[in-house]
Image (cartoon, rainbow, N blue to C red):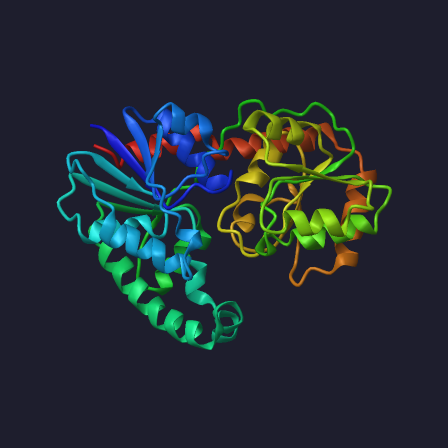
Length: 359
C-alpha cells in the first residue's frame, strides 16, 4: 500500500526534516506532502516529485501557529483514503479530525508543541496584550482538537521518553520509537582541532552562549553550521573573532565531513526532544558537550559519550569544559564505544519498527 508522509513544514534542514526525507526514500511508494517548503533548501526533493508543498506561507500571518492550525484542520484534503497516512508534526495530525475513514494512520511526534507552555508574559512580549489574550484562548482549543484527532489514529508514537511524558500530561498516550539516524559517511578520521555547533541559530538552541564562550577563548576554533533568525546579528556582533566561523546551511555530505573532522560537538538546546546531532557526532567517534535536559539524557547516557552540563549553564563552566576537551587525548576504546552507541539508532532499525505499523 502507498504511504503519504505529512509533516507540518520544511523551513530548515533540521532533524525532523532529515528523518522525513530519509523515510520517504526507505518506505515503498512513499511521498511527502506539507503546507510549505523552502524551495532553496529543498530544491532536489521538490523537483524530483518526492516533496509536494502547498505554498502556504503561514509565517507571514500575525499568528503563524493559528494559520497552520486552520490549514491542517480545514484546508488540507487526503485525496486517497486507501493509503498509509503517516503524520509527523504537531499540526499535521489535525487532518485526522475530518478524515476518520483512513485505512491506516500513524502519528509520529518528533516534538511537543512548546507554544502551549508559553506564559502570559511571554505571549504579551511577542504579541501585545490583546494578542496574548487571543493566544491563551487558542491553546486549549488546539489541545482539544489535537486529542480528538489523535484518537482516530491507528498508532500513536513519540520519538523519545521526554516527548512521551509531555504528551501524557495532556492526556495523549504514545509508544516510544526512537528516530533513525543516517550513519553512512560518518567515521573517525582524527580531528582538525575545531569545535562544531550544528544547531539552528535560534534562541532556544542557546547558540549565543556557545559563541560568547569562544569569543573569550581566542585560541580555540568554533565552526557554526546552519542558519536561523540569529545568523546575521551573530555574524555582525562577532565579526572581529577570527576563531569563529559561520558556515551557513550545508548539504548533508558536507555536514557529515564536519563531524568527521571536528574535535567535539557542542549542543546545548533548551529541552531538546531527541536530538539527531549528538548521535551523528557519536557515529563519527566524537564526544558531545551537551545539556542535561530532554532527549540528551537518553542518548548521552555514559560519560565516555560526552559531558552534560546542568542548567542554568554558566559561560565559565562551558569555557572550562571546552578547554578540557581541547587538551584531552581520545582513547581508542572511547572512540569505538561512541560509534557502537550510535548504532542503537541506526536508520534501518527505525524503518523496520515503523513498517510494523504500516499496512
